[in-house]
Length: 240
Image (cartoon, rainbow, N blue to C red; front, side):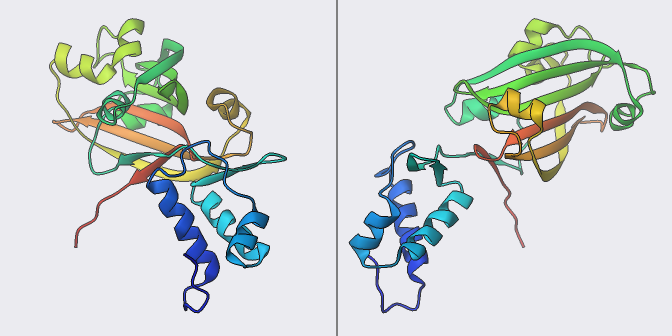
């Protein structure tokens, strides 16, 4: 309930009220929320105050607006913890989602200077270049390009790539993947990213560069990914 005599701003009270309804499941993904006018009349507050609460919830990913139709509850974002190294497939399975990939291309190419540096190999050495769309319950989540040394990881094939590269490395080649590092930055989708991720050009995305290492510190994979910011978020646990 909105308390007008509270020191807490009214827009924030409404924002938290709606957030609570969404988190409890009383408002589910795709549900239309009452209009600004309806909330303004219900709580006897200004439409500007309601709009401020809606805007904040849109910015936080709880709601989304469709022009000419109204405001709706957004699909919940998938959280990925940053304190544990898991493949995309392993992460989706752990969350009870169906992982999937659409392979765009798979080929062996000479390593560029950047890729060679990331994989600690000679420039022009052969590397697998794997371009694919990562899916969760058939929804595009990320556009990903992976580079793996063909001299280190032998026998990689298209069917293996369509399943799990990490499983092949660990279970078939008996190599132990140990740790990784990531660089994350915000950006907006270009035309190619928008096409494959089924979002609008200019929509917010997260650009991620990741290096993955074996136990002996040998770089085994270098990945560049574009994640949908409306469907994915990252979580980190910090201790003092």
